[in-house]
Image 1: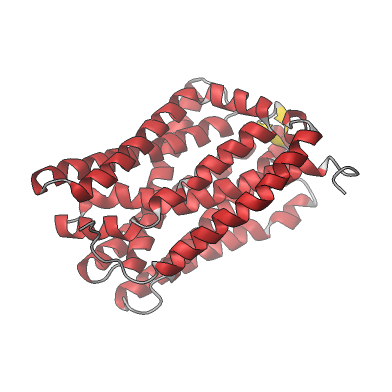
Image 2: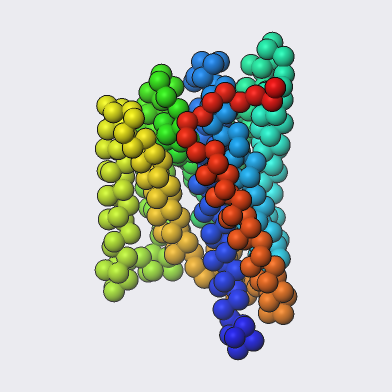
Length: 334
């Protein structure tokens, strides 16, 4: 089958890479959001916030490694083009990831007088990572070109992505905590939702404007009719999420996970729209997934490895979330 239809291979790997990025954005998005929110909590609340992501945060980053690995081995030409353009924000993002990883481990084991310093390091690492990811998204949408408009849009995306992460982080905390911290998390979720909606609106408006091809994909007939459910569903999810957050504020013990699951759905819908806009290009307006793909023989070998690796990652991720379900408790190594 693979020999008869080698053109399916680039699409398959593009889908796998896209799925990995989406899962990373959602899963690492909420623990980055927790890190961004941590300065707004009391010291004893910060311990619970850290504990809520303790069993998950490092495994969540596995999906970023998988996505970049698939880009490298399946689309090597695009890998060079994209990372060359995004070299600076990608480097800063790695520094942020390293800083937050070190801070997470040292904070739990550090003497009390040093804990506050490591808490701030965790915040700074999370903030840098989120800002850089937003900036990379903005630069990518603008076609990897650098000018004043690109930098301004990248800055807007950086801010909106960061606030969006704080929203999903807030909904995660609202699900995993109780008491005063849960009340604070609900308010953080509400404020973050407004920022996330601003970001979705900016990207939705800018993406068709930077490319006539993307404009035609969304606003030509009959495509406009077929695609109308996506924005309508997105608006419905936003309204439902807002109502779910307000309901959770009144009744903290009833369906505490609903805002988090709706936040995941909102991120997924935004990502689907973005993926549709750029397909089949992996480098905007320059290189399609078929142009950038490695040789079919190489892709076949890599595909067999992916068939074993991907279910393994999915399996231990699902197991971790199942084992550590329920409300968070203080994290300790003693």
